Image 1 (cartoon, rainbow, N blue to C red):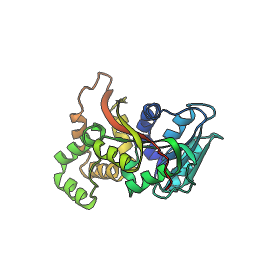
Image 2: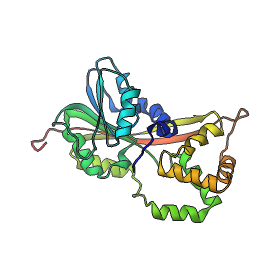
Image 3: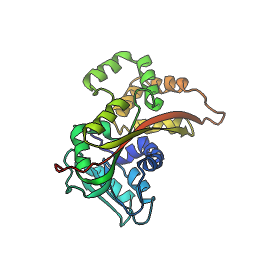
Image 4: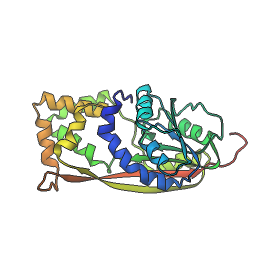
Length: 268
């Protein structure tokens, strides 16, 4: 999936990446002074968190989208940070270049996850950490699933047509991710479930970032809302429970994290 508006994406999902990143970094057990590879760096949420971990930590971020690399470079102004255009499946680094390789909320975007993980393993020194985190899209992100529920209530045929035209790969499972890590030759593979409350000041705070259309799904929702004269937004608002008197509300979110230790091998 190609994202072409980093500023809109940062408002849409980047703020939640920034909230999740500290828990992920803690899970990855990083140490000050390490050189960390941020694979699929996006708008720089993980890189900022990694740099805050210690003054001697360095981070190199890569992303296939040039606009996002430029955005991250401007957003993360540090002599210890470097960003460049590169795909996870073909990392432009020598073997054992990094102390750890991390991927925050991008595993589902890799065109070839197996190759990407093997590449992350190749460029990580023996004994280093390779870790990834991704949303539980099936049951752990009502921020998105509520929009689909509202859209199906408003225009089910349009939803069915969009899904036919935009087939998604099978959703990842935690067991499948663990198997991917083990098949890549890592040892001591462990997992964690990371949960956080998504707090919204108002319905507008929740809904307006969709209207910027930073992803194909949000662009579809924005277009449907326009085509239905705002009915999608009205139905969606009715589906949100637990709204406080001031209009604020909280939606839960859940992500899975996995990590393994890069094992020495003569073939790396």
